[in-house]
Length: 141
Image 1 (spheres, rainbow, N blue to C red):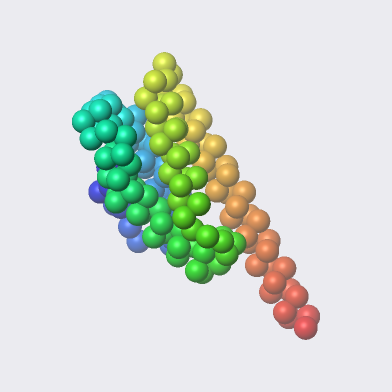
Image 2: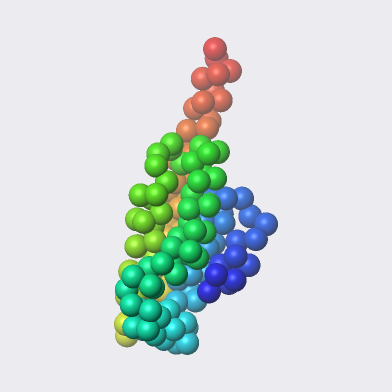
């Protein structure tokens, strides 16, 4: 799973890495063998604590790295990164669990990916507007 996410996000800016990584994670989580290992076997064999440690060392570490870059370059507002990591990781894991149980997996994956894209597009538009306002203000001053 980590390799798929890393491959999808290679050579992109940090914001697009985050978006591509999330979309790839969602798509991969609909594959039956990934669901079996990631959502059923791993938590059962490792226990909830062991599974969370593994998730923290892989997916959550990726999220922490990219979110730290996004905060550092001010793509997103300055704030503590750890809460963002846990919020986004929880949302992604919940979406994966929901998709795994979906009776209309393809449709629900498309809807989930569309929701992710819509949210990310809204953020990009707000950021672009914000940058234009900053540029306009500084050129007036």
